[in-house]
Image (cartoon, rainbow, N blue to C red; front, side):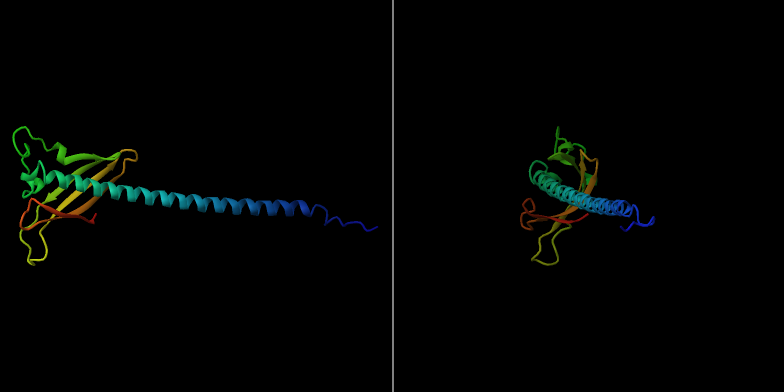
Length: 164
């Protein structure tokens, strides 16, 4: 009968611990990668939601500027009268509002500069909005261009996002 040497005893136990440790570390690495990917997707989703909310807010403000606040169209927001468009009218409904679960604030309104140099393009006003997320406390800003009909400036043609 052959007997084992003293150096070979207990060879499989450390090997199985080593293999188990490698498997544990690789599964933790995979889990970390999956969680990181999930977090990135969630962040992208929040950014898209904020972008959609800002676009909706721009549409709301544009509708108000072409409705009850039409008298403010040619005036920059820094020069708006405190009374708005008449006695008893308040600018609070125009300066701040709600879209979904977020609140927006009108940061700046700059009317169109006048007739464009090219007859093809209609004058474009600028609207800057800030969105405040209620759940997260985050803030996002966006600049929108509002293209007005050159023949009937009270008529809105398009609202497009221009940047941050």
